[in-house]
Image 1 (cartoon, rainbow, N blue to C red):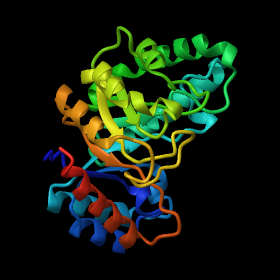
Image 2 (image 1 turned 90 degrees about the vertical axis):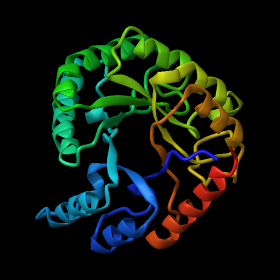
Image 3 (image 1 turned 30 degrees about the vertical axis):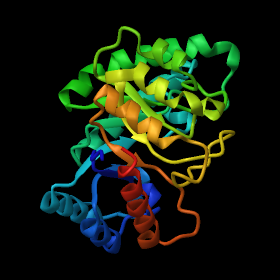
Length: 270
């Protein structure tokens, strides 16, 4: 039985944080959270964020990762240098925001969608330039960047893409493996994990149909989670075991209960 501790993207439970959600999370078995700026978009006076921080301090739970928005204005790999520089300015703001909750990882999409497929090498070059430019600020804030595997024709849709993006980069840069983003490559998940090794910083756990992303609860789709866990164990993975499942129309308590039940079943696989 493995025990990495249950991690949850707050967006898998609720669209907007409030006092009731904070109480729910405090009583839960969740030990790590991933958050994003839209979690607090109605928190105009900062009181809800302050109460959330107090809950984290009381419980010892960790807000370990921060998901940077992924609109074109946030694309630090954009071939248009004007767009890239604007996105870098926004990224610095996100670093400041993430530091407020002592987040250690910034989850970044390697591109927006759609992209000009003839410029994939240009996207990679722009992304690498951006990572090198931001590395000093990451060090100052004790943070790392995890590039997220993406679906379809986005950048970062193959292991080869990730290796090109990270080649020669320091240990400030690694990967977030969203296991439902790799389209028809799902049988390769264990091999991808082994190939990434220490560059695998975090996970987005969910399931899908093997065709396109669904963010289903694990065991509904095609992923062999036992083989995935065996590969994680083999590389000595100790990062977040972070669920990023869809909410459908369910309320927060129902979403959280379903994730906790699923995680309990997941732990029994290994």
